[in-house]
Length: 543
Ligand SMILES: Cc1ncc(C[n+]2csc(CCOP(=O)(O)OP(=O)(O)O)c2C)c(N)n1
Ligand SMILES: [Mg+2]
Image (cartoon, rainbow, N blue to C red; front, side, top):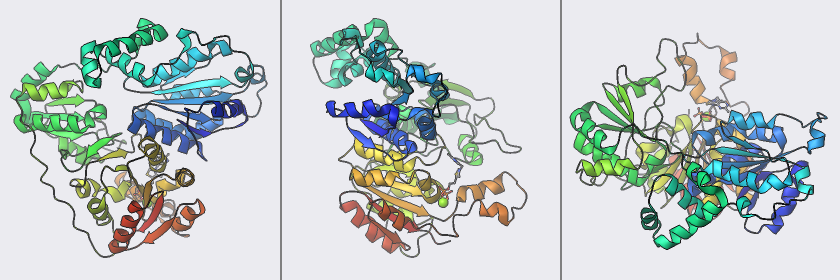
């Protein structure tokens, strides 16, 4: 899978796509759409997509969503063209430091010096991107590599791993035995050994070991069980990343039920399982006061796939570190969670008591639109959630909806929601994707609509149109800035002129309607979800 916005230096790559039938290429009209789509793809498929970006400036346009992808631990392989080696020293107009951009993402940078090194560099980039927990690899390809001969001749050491070989090599590196892997994948141990043999031939044994640089836990399930038995009421389990599957959430709910430990989900998860039958575990609040309240009195904080909590921003007279003073912080690996629940003899959680939402009526407001979505969410949906201030009620509204996945804004760089929806829809073509998208953030990467139309992706976009950067209006008060005048307000207001999302969507080839009441949203959302292809609803909120 390749999300592309190419230029002259990538023309050979573009031309070669027709001889690689196994690679799908999707055109994105802005690099931030390509990189966000690669993030969404990785979150749903669990494997990397490539982006194709035009030198440093192209990559720079895609950086904000690569930053979100990094925070989501999404594996991504950026393929970035560069000038031919001889041309680089001339400081031609597009010349820039691409390596610095790759490093800025705290990822790996691979720059093969000759065509002979190409196979190895590609393999190293994929290996690096997919090393748990997932990172951004940048492969810089000088244009002349495309027109010089490769003498690598497909030597075993240069061949990329197949998905299965990579999966198995990763399990091995994580310490699983051949038998355990065979059971996990429901194949024979001989099959596992065969794949492993070929992976070792390709990567060497050290390469295989490096695949699994696992985040270590500093408590095991035995000591965590002791800790929670005696200090449960003063302990908080903070879940993140790979712990947010149905299995992880169920295990955490079981642990909480027998130990009285509180359980919270990190504020902005990359992918969170939710809905009927999935324990409805609250997320750590965005505002410091909320988070402090949720963590109050905790003497032990057990992190499972999550980072130690900090506030989003610094505020005057407020602490930035959310770990309660004096609390000890422990880390537990995600796969020890089930073990811990079993060790505690914790019974299976009872079915979630939440009941399906009733459809609201009246003018659309921040506090009723989400009930419509909650009541009508289709089976097996994927929600790309960039609803921002309009989304406060969403978790409540969807707790009893059919089981679904929620993808949130992991790195705070807005403009992620529509591109992530594109990637998710491509990774999971049989699942309906619902993009709940605040107006201001939508506009950063609005051209994602065109890719949705061109690829006929099954996405329903609901624009939460409050004609404002509402969060910044709130933040303006919170930072204690003195009474803001009209000039300050004008920077946070999106009216005058009002933005016509219906016209914009239609211009990009996406059928669109406008809803101003809950009844209209109900009808339009049901119709949009039932019909194939993309649709947009401009849900205009009453002030
Ligand atoms: C890349 C990037 N640019 C700017 C910001 C600052 N910022 C945070 S929220 C926001 C406005 C969000 O407005 P909207 O998407 O309409 O959501 P609302 O607050 O109205 O719910 C801005 C500009 C950011 N977080 N990321
Ligand atoms: Mg807004």
